[in-house]
Length: 308
Image (cartoon, rainbow, N blue to C red; front, side):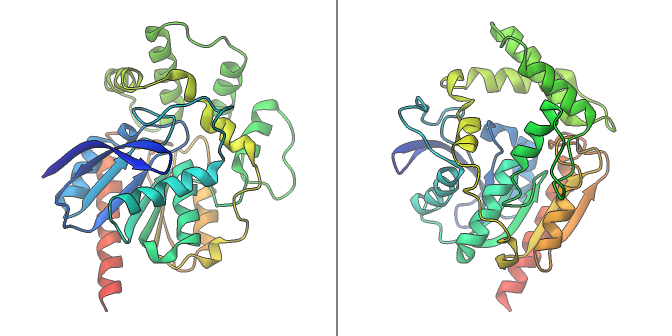
C-alpha cells in the first residue's frame, strides 16, 4: 500500500517526503544525488522494493523539488547539513534505523551516515558514487577546466561527460521551460552512457515532471554552493569504520565516476561490488529491475545476519 506524500518538518526546513509500502515493514531511505529530486528514483524501482516487503521513503533535499527553497546567502549550509537532514528525517518519522540507499552524491551522504551513526544503518547501498572524503567534486572541476589531476586522484570522468558539461558551463542558461527540458534531456543522454538505448520520450516526460514540480528553479544550484562552502567537511579515511553490510553498484558505462565504485568497496570491510552491464550514471528502464532485485537480496541478507 502507498501512504502518500507529505511535508515533514526537519529542523528549520520542510522536506517533501513520499512513502510506499506497509509502514510496519523494514524501512528503506532513498537519498538522491546533488541537485536531484526524489522522483529521479524510478517508480518501478520504488515499487519493486515495496512489493518485496519494505517501507520505502524518498524525499526532496532542501532547495530541491517541493521542499523548502531559500536564498543561499541568507541561509548558507554545507553537505554536512544535507547529511543531518537525512538523519533528521528518520527522527521525524520515528525510525530508529533503516536500510540506506544513496545515488551519486546521495551515496556520499549515505556513507557519511554509516560512519557517524552506525546504529541507524541496517544496510548500506551506494549507486554511482565516490568514496567519502575523496573530494570528487574537485576532480570533476579540474577535468572541466582541463587542469592536470594531482597524483593519486580519482579516475576522471569520460570525455563525453567532460565535453558536454564544459560547453554547458560557458553557455547561457535556458530561458524557457522548453529549452530547460531540452537541455536536461541532452544531459541525461550523456549520463545514460552509450551501451543501452536511450528513451528520449520517457526522459522528456520525466524532465517535464521535474521542471513543473520545482518550487524555485533559482535554488537548484544551491547544492553546488554548499559543496564549495566547505570542501573539507567530509571525513577522509573514515570508510574503514563502516560496519553496515554494504553493496556498491556501478555501471559498466558510468561516464561521471568510472572506477569509483571499486575504490569504495576496497575501503569497507566485506563490501560487495556489483557491476551492472550497460548502466551509465542513472537508473533507467533497462537497469532498474536488476539493481532493485540485487538490493532486495542484499537487504534480506543483512536482515538475516542481524537476526542471528
